[in-house]
Length: 199
Image (cartoon, rainbow, N blue to C red; front, top):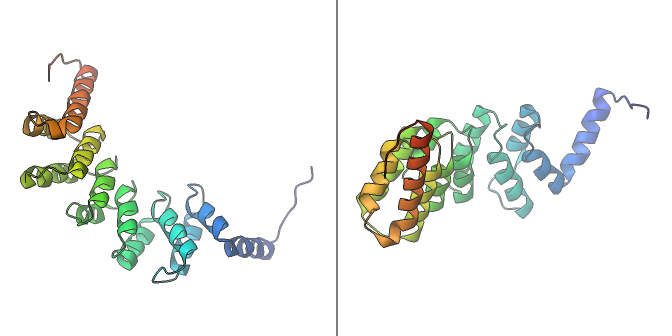
């Protein structure tokens, strides 16, 4: 099969044709191999506010893409910080800068905090703050159990936080899933470290 050589102008034309299709835009937006410059151009080309349904999916695919350059992540955060879905995707993106992640610790939308608890690139001190905020509330909500169980499964979560979950919620049946997750991960870490310790 003969390789077809395209001029720069032809490549640009093909790219523009692809960009006309929202489905193609979404595929490019979530591609980890897409050129960062192209992703940045897409981010700046989106309509604000996001009113068209397909644009919203392109935006969410972009925001969750770890190939997005830091300055573009910052641009998207500043441009769309009022949108819960955007904050949720940013909170879960491993490339989101720590100073932005810090803003999600007290986010009013608990689904944003859940996404942050799942992020393996979140600094341990941010994950510890999520735990401390929940521990201070003393409230029992299913989403808190989800956040703590997710936090316990995060490899960036410290042993101190895992022990905190066990000690704070060990006697509460409503938090058993989070406590069991924390105990399991504590035991696994101690096995890896060669410690024989019952939790």
